[in-house]
Structure formats: C-alpha cells, structure tokens
Image (cartoon, rainbow, N blue to C red):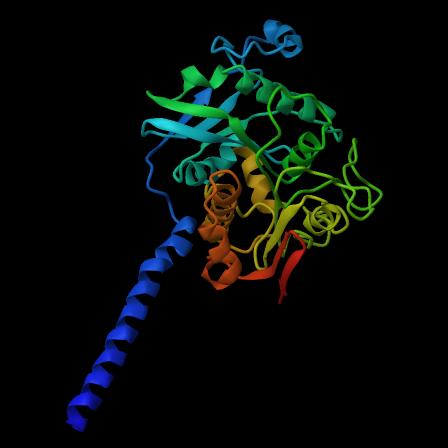
Amino acid sequence: MKTIVFAAQILFCFVLLLFQLLTMAAAAPSITGVFDHGSYGVALVKVDEAPRKCSAARKSAAPTGGGGAGAPPKPLLVAAPREAGEYPVVLFLHGYLANNSFYSQLLEHVASHGFVVVGPQLYAISGPGTTDEINSAAAVINWLAAGGLSSKLPPDVRADSTKVSISGHSRGGKVAFALALGHANVSLPPIAALVAVDPVDGMGAGKQTPPPILTYKENSLRVAAPVMVVGTGLGGLPRGPLLPPCAPRGVSHDDFYGECAAPTACHLVARDYGHTDMMDDVTPGARGLATRAVCRSGGARAPMRRFVGGAMVAFLKRWVGGEPGLLDGIRARPETAPVALSVVEFRDGGDDDDRNS
C-alpha cells in the first residue's frame, strides 16, 4: 500500500512539473513574440505631399475634422495592417539628414502588431535649427486630425486619431519631445505616448541645436504622457579619431530620461549597438552610406531593429492598448530581448526598478 501511495505522489509531482513547464512554454511567445513580426499583414504606402504652392495655405488653415484634408503637408511613408479594423496611430520622425525610407522595416514591424505608423519626410536639406522640423511635424499631426489619412489606407482600415503616439529617432526624438512639451500647436487630444529612440539635442552640452530641449535641471521635461527612452551603448562613442560621436554624451538618451518628469517612464539601453543600427539592412544613396560610415555600429542591424520595434510595441500596447503583459515581460525578463541590455529602468508611481550592468 505504501508503495502505491509513494508512486502516486511521484506521479503527481511529475504531472505538476510537466504542467508548469507547459505553462511557461505557452507564456514565452507572449513575451518574446513582440520582437518578431506580428500577426498582421502590412501594406507600405508612399503618400505624396500637397503641391508646393498650396503648402502655406494648408499649414495656416485650421483642421476641419472631416475626411477632405487632401494631400499631406509633407511626403509620408505609411505602414498599416491590411486587415479591416481601427488602429491607433504612431507618428515616427526620422533622424538628422536621414530618409524616412531608412526605417521602413522598423515601421513594418510596429504596424504588424496592430498600429498605423506614419513616417513623414520632414525635409530634404536642413540646418542646425529644428524649429522648421517641429512645425512641419505639427502640420502633419493637424492633417491627421483632419482625417487626411482615411483615403490613404487599405480598404476598411481606419486610423484612430484619438489615440496618437509620437516617436522619433536621433534629432527626430528631440522633435518628438518638443511636440509633447508644446513647442507647436497641434489639433489633437493629449498624445497617448512618447517614444524617443536614441534622442539627440545637439553636438554636446552647451552645443545644443535651437530650440534647446534639455535644460540640465531635474524634472524639467514635464510630459503628461507615458515616456519610453531607448538608448544605445555605442552611440556616445566616435566611429574614428576624426569623427564626432553620433549621440554625444550630455545631449543624449541618459539626459532626456534623467530630466523627464513624466508620471510614467522607462529607459532601455542596448549595450552593444550603435546610433543607426535600428535602420533598414539596406540604406541606399550617399545618405544611406553615411549611416554606416559616420556612426559606430554593433554589426548586423536586424537584432537592434527587432529590439526597438518590440520595445515600442510592448510600450504602446501597455499605454495605448491597455495590455500590460508584454511590457511587464520585458521588465521581468530583459534577457528575452534580442540584444543585451545594460540599462533597464522603470519609473511608475514612485516604484523604481533599476538594473544597470
């Protein structure tokens, strides 16, 4: 009898262990799957800007809120799910002298998880100041608020202009912060979330591009929306002795996160990757070559791009979609990311979780 009871206990323990292993295996894709292409097919569409002679009038006109907004004030690259439905909008702002097309694979990654991602080409040539970029990005947001995107999407796909998040890379990250801080008038409800990817505010401390965003005062960047700052471990290092770093210390991700006074914020840093490593595998032309020649790189771009795309999706799903599981998974198990993370910081309601390695 004792032998039977003992055997039953062993069998019960084995079944319980097997159940736990199966449960963990089933839960793993919900955490790691965010770094892979999502379940939605994606349409990538280029949208031409309004004729130049009409641009000034369109910029000065107030949005009507209808669907007759016509062409946008800037050329757009739009990544959207093909499946019918209504999806939150993410505005993604390119880096300094970069093309929006350099981020097409990143935009597709985010869109494949159920977002309409709009990447405007803010300029062809630009000087050191960012005022024009801020105003141009605001004009695109106002065009979105007027329903301009409705005729540019796949059939039965709708953009939810009540849930618009702003994101940007490098100088585009600075512009995203500027918009969130009210440096331009936009005709939308408060932004849903802000994601800055290796943001840069100039050539160094004291060498900021106008208008400066960083103040070097604690809690000075008062953003009402949840904020994610993604940084790179190699961005602050020069590619060679004659080249400046692409994300200089003193004006980069550490500083933006350190000054951010958002009620909820997180900071993730990819230790072994550089400032442009989230771009497409192939970035053609002279500007595309410069993204590899000027900035220090960690090698193949796919892992960093998967990480940035997955982190963005997890953050947006949490604060726009009300689905905390993916972001909580990254927070609890940062080793599931496709890159090594040297910083994993979360601030939410006074609960700090800092992991620096």
